[in-house]
Image 1 (tube, one colour):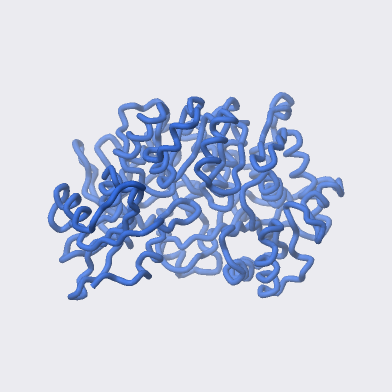
Image 2 (tube, helix red, strand yellow):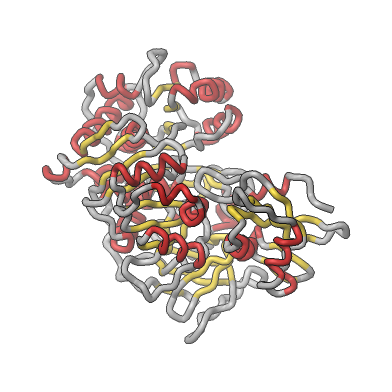
Length: 529
């Protein structure tokens, strides 16, 4: 049963990312502040941003880099990142963005797989970047800096060359703009082939739903190297001529200070930040009254947690859903729809179709006229769906159907109103005595405990080798909990098969830079017999 978007379709221009974002920029917009680098306090106007992008594109072209080439960026958020990233796309080359936490071996693997010719990094990352370049067979001068320590070619050097941007021609529907890396539904990271049309489409689809404006100040704490940061915090914000405040890494006091001092109005977060905003006493020490909207993505945001944040901060809390393979957004809660309950990821964006299928049988799940559907795997089709995985036809066939539907690997339900709720990752479901237990449901329940600061749940073997739910719990300072306390709290609120049967206390829940729980790291810890 195909579910069409309730939003009217939007026009998707047949343009490159650069032409879509900046090709028709007005004189008034050029004078507006595009970026504020929080580390330096430096402001960059749209005029300066476009000039920098053009100059970088010209410098790359002069070095023989253009259509068919790949340039890597390994750096935290900054104005320089934005200029380099869009300069690469403006030159006709493809950008592959690398996790800023990666070590040399991981960087080298992505450089080799993407066949990158040049690597942009920053001075603090230079040791691992240089080692990675050598491992990948790149020359030492193929590593350039976004900042400048005087040791090698820098972004400022490229801009100062003052070369005009090249004239490039390609088909936006087939030309690869970016190669972010994703594990998809399973396995090791794979290059996600996203075209200029994919990125342009997702910005065009999201703007009428997210409803950002030129008056917004968007705090960019989630990384630009991740597709969430790349499309939502950078491209969508620039498309509406908002001001983007770049934050190199998450630090709660600094995060709160930047909202206060720069009067941020629109902040995109992941659920771990929502937990801090709901529970940390430090929040009350800052003036966050400028906040209009907090928008959560990257992982499910529980309704109770969303309400707690909204009540504490007095702002709208919304969430959306997506993945790298979708450029990334497919669903979002529209602004001003108070009838849509917290805990759901909202409605499909314009130009998107989706459906639910039984992961065991593949049969379509019917959406009822009243109430909520059975759970099933969510499939999505639209102009934002990737072309496939780089050099991996088998993985592409496994995730992309011949009719264009993409398997998200997420279990969801759909209400009669069309509201989509993500239950959990298909591969993360715990199988206990034939029952399926969703870790996200138990995590949301644990976070409602007044003494629990954070929590994660994974499947772990018991003494008989049976997979059971195991909770890893971070206790708030000043509180004491015993494993029995945690298990009893959950047992009183769930069906018997969902009970937490093992508990481990931990200082911090390991998470990716985009806010996803690193369950593999938790599974690697010694299981409780």
